[in-house]
Image 1 (cartoon, helix red, strand yellow):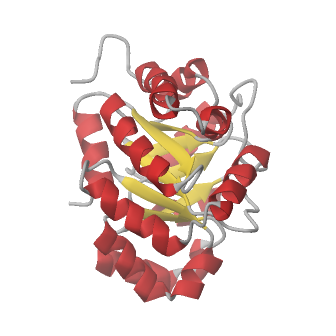
Image 2: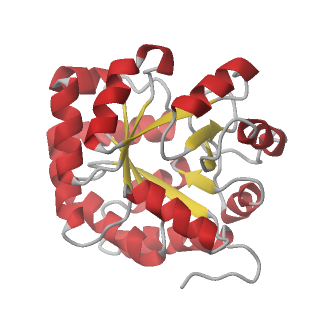
Image 3: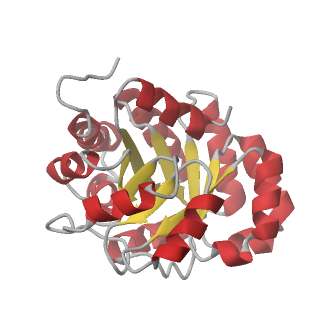
Amino acid sequence: MNRIVERFARLKGQSQKGLIAYIGAGDPDLEATRRLALEFDRVGVDVLELGVPFSDPLADGLVNQLAARRGLASGTTPAGVLETVAAIRNGCQVPIVLYIYFNLVHRHGLERFVGDAAKAGVDGLLVLDLPPEEAANYEAVMARAGLCNIYLVAPTTPDERIELIAKRARGFVYYVSREGVTGMQARVADTVGAMTAKIRIHTDLPIVVGFGVSTPEQAGLVARVADGVVVGSAIVNQIAEHGHEPAMVSTVGGFVRSLVRAVEPVGVGRP
């Protein structure tokens, strides 16, 4: 079974919510990415989302744009990211999603990239700029490889398109909690509960919420209505601040542990 599917089935069976942690691959370098992945698994992260550095990350705010720039500066390539995933697999089995733009997949070759990703130990792809209306061949290739094709639903997505996305997604549906790009926010959008309820009408897949979730308190609020919470920019910001310190991995891991604990339902702890 795909690791993403297996993890969310286990969480549901234990009445738990998931924490999805995003970092930019290669920030500050790929060895740091490998070490952070192992630390995140140790502190209880349920899914690791790795951003593949790209020169034009149009869905990303400044924090993640700078992480992509640092990743490119460290020499990180899609092939290098897959090598790092394979190295991570030597130490843990945390589900891994690649957050990627289609140019990089296309340049590598769709079937070759998906095959290489599956071989390395990737479990799903979130291709930011590939809408499901144009993704029939991509979905077929992903299905053959056993990978989850993950799609985004936005606050502005019409009801009929939510239904289409929910039917085509695999692994989980990713609800973008705010209009615009990724980034830290002072508060959670008031519409999160209503939108997750609307998406649930169309799917039994887990619904995770991201874009703007920045603190343990916010993560806890979102976990009340969603099956999983995605935190990215706040973690990436920690890496930016501590990236070259000897204790960077444990420092960032401590922050991520606080997020993991925040999404746990009252009275339910991690094994």
